[in-house]
Length: 335
Image 1: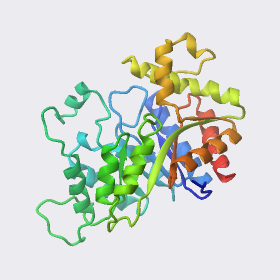
Image 2 (image 1 turned 60 degrees about the horizontal axis):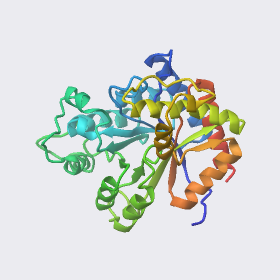
Image 3 (image 1 turned 180 degrees about the vertical axis):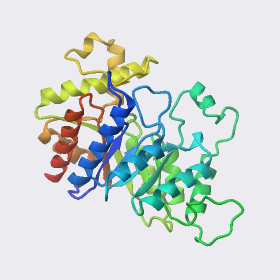
């Protein structure tokens, strides 16, 4: 498959809270990164919903989207994603209707089916899923029905604002489920290969083969999310990457926490089995200098035919993180 040099590059921000920092610091850092992303030409900037994760500050996703939208002027802001099982669809329609009213033509609603949390946290969210039928497809259809209704429709229940606003809706996934649903509903699809690369090719093929054109989308549009850690040298990038690797080790130990500082010797902190699991989860990560990132992005687009690439980068030092995203865009511009 030929490489396209014109694919949009976007940002996924998990609003990381490094060790020794607070959520307030993460919010300010996200705003600075969003403003830089806008200046550099990134296409969209998404934030992800996670709960009970002391190293991620984006739990109140729609609130943080509003904060970043107020500090930028043209950048598309959205969720990557809102975990719909945690919420009543009406509440999400109202939240994103409000955002789209305040920031017209700039808001995306990316939806995930996973809870983004553990079982106990899910119960604390008052969304009890055990023993219940999966309502995700119906909930997505309910949202689309509101967003695509005539603005003057008189429905028994309607989001105010939100009705008839045609807010762009994406489905996100790390398996085949959302790929099939996105194809059936004629929606754009984003695959989370930054932490679950195993089913990437199968999901993309399924989405494209089964895609049914809709009033929202005439042909498939697939976005692939990958980790990119860029620095001025390969060694520096590998050093920075150890923060993300440690974070994944801690998650698998059931000990999530603030984003760790990078280390020189990762093997001293994890067992071979843990390191193997992390390597599998992060196998598509692109780590290196600008040239290595350019080659990695080209290979990813060649292998997947992605219409758009989204970049995630959990980096401990804020300035190093800003520099990494700047190098990623410079690498994409060199394709």
